[in-house]
Length: 228
Image 1 (cartoon, one colour):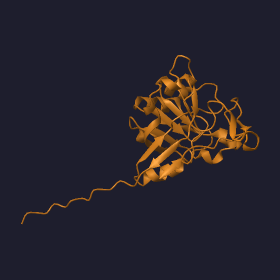
Image 2: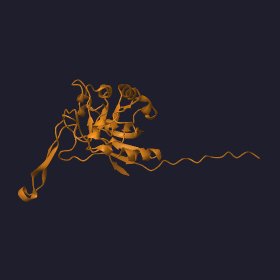
Image 3: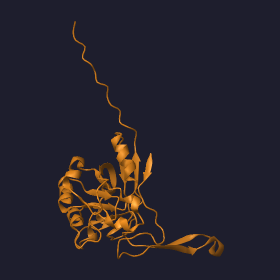
Image 4: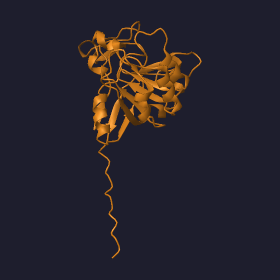
């Protein structure tokens, strides 16, 4: 099963406060020029996207400096649905799910508020949580919210902890509730967060998808037969 984890790119879609607005319009049409070509205006952080470390510091790696392995791999889902608006996501909530080399996806449930004012009131990672994730060896983190930090934020401590370790951050994911259920059923989950190849970029939109496999078989327990 393939699950689409991306929001659609549309004219006037929600963007982070202060980011470029999104506009799609026909540049060429079949009627006028014989072909349809769309003109696209958006920011690097539009929609479902990934942040490169360069997003918060000129000295850190840009998008095309990162290995492709950062954008593909086995996923571990953290279910923090039910948190209050603007609630902190504390270390104890993520600690049981930290496995080095996996892509950590944090399901807040806030994707259901996409397009509303409440979408800006999402839960967020504390600096201590981000630091624990980094210490565990994880280098890719995604969330179904506008940011891993509060919105708006005077500083970006979670971004700084993750990006400082050259980690990738994916934001504005959706449908993580389906992955929570799949994980509970023991089904393996692989995620692709491959971005547009924008040279020297701080980030880029992605078509994020997950491949959910069948439930892993449990080996039957063999009973020892006592010797007669």
